[in-house]
Amino acid sequence: MSKLPIRRVAAPAATAVLFAATVLAAATPATAAQQGLLTCRGDSQSSFNPAITTTPTSVHFDAYETFGCLNFVGGVKLTTGKNESHGYFTASCSSLASPNNPNYATFIWNNENSSTVHFATSRSESVGGNVNIIQEGTVTNGFGKGSSVIETITLLNTSLTQCLTSTGLTSAKGPILLQFV
Image (cartoon, rainbow, N blue to C red; front, side, top):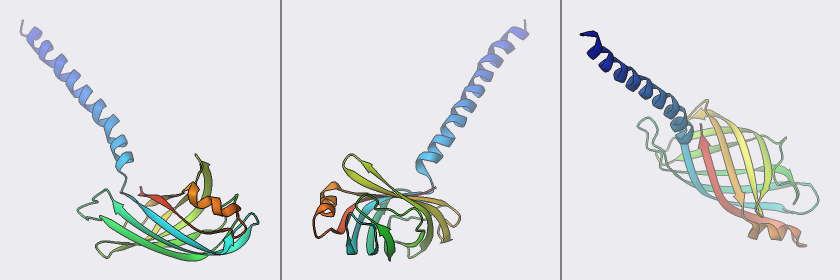
């Protein structure tokens, strides 16, 4: 008779342990994937010279980005950031991102630390009348060194209508999603 109570206790306990292990195994990757190392949202403003037109040409750009960050990482409270980028890329109205034009960006954080990112790839996609420029790379120096980075810049349709005018697209702005994973 002593075995019956043990089975009753052991079976529910084993079920509870198995259930808890299953829940933790399933929840841990999803939570890590959702949070990542750092997630920031912000705004981008860029100017182009010469203006971007329907003909592919080398264009000088000046980009200014500001961010509000959602995650606190390892006790480090990175709540805001900014980036200024300048350089050249080949662009036209039909291709606002040059996949063969890697670039570097340095993000300055509210605690005066920085992250230098080498964006190795860049592509553009049209989505719902907007253009998303997606850059992917790796942190080469500073906070998050070795982490993968994905930056999505959405150029709103209202600014892209200039691209089809005789003066071309001289500036663009829109929201940004920056993720260190």
